[in-house]
Amino acid sequence: IRFQRTNTWYRARLRAVSWLRCGCRQRVERGSPNTPVPSNTDVKACTTVRYVATSQLHRISLTSSCREDNLIGSINRFWNQTWTDQKIVFYEDRDFQGRYYECNSDCPELNTHFSRCNSVRVESGAWVLYERPNYLGYQYILTRGEYADYQSWLGYNESVRSCRIIRNTSGVFRVRVYEQPDFSGQMLECTDDVNNLPDRWHLREVHSAQVQDGAWVFYELPNYRGRQYLLERGQYRHFNEWAAMNPNVGSFRHVQDF
Image 1 (spheres, rainbow, N blue to C red):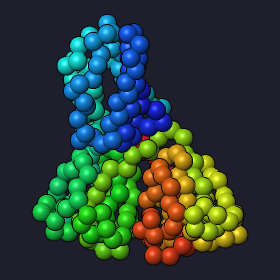
Image 2 (cartoon, helix red, strand yellow):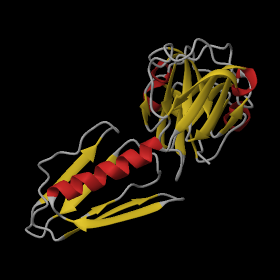
Image 3 (cartoon, rainbow, N blue to C red):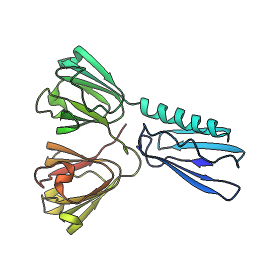
Image 4 (cartoon, helix red, strand yellow):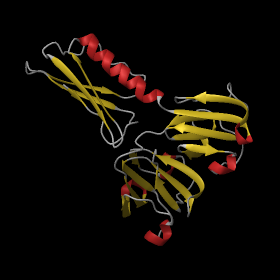
């Protein structure tokens, strides 16, 4: 049985495909880090289990007996290791001073941990911060590094009320943008960053988009300025589906977790 994660180490979905010698095929999918592995996985017909996780930077291979409890334990141990590798530290004052809070998972409500945020240290992973609770308001995309004040992440104020981990930040990156809603009109496909969309496409409005690989951030103005919008893998039939108030897109780039 081979379990493989492709494209990115921090992908939200883990797919496991099991081929049993008895001729029975069963596919198990995990949709989020909190989703338990089904306990009724039929692996009794096999003799060994090989569990492989790959990305551009990492490879882990686990081999164990195919007993059901060992299989589930191996998957859960690896899954927990993968997601606890993410870490971000919020500070109430500038230059990493004052009260602080360490976070290693999605959090829809940060009010209970600090009252304001004036500096951030991203120790691992890529994150999107939100001005309001429940992943609403202005978005700020941060990758590994130190941010001594909120202006350094292009923030509008010291309010950070929710955050979550960005998945699909390594491997292949590909996005399609469309002139009209529902993927109609002119189309531009990109695999690299675009710092000035009107110069390259002669259009500034993007009404729909398809993120085929990776994670991307759209900026309202050229040269990666203005409001930010995170687009992860999926289809966006209208600009309001990526939380924009208008179709203006001046630049965009992929989110890389170095």
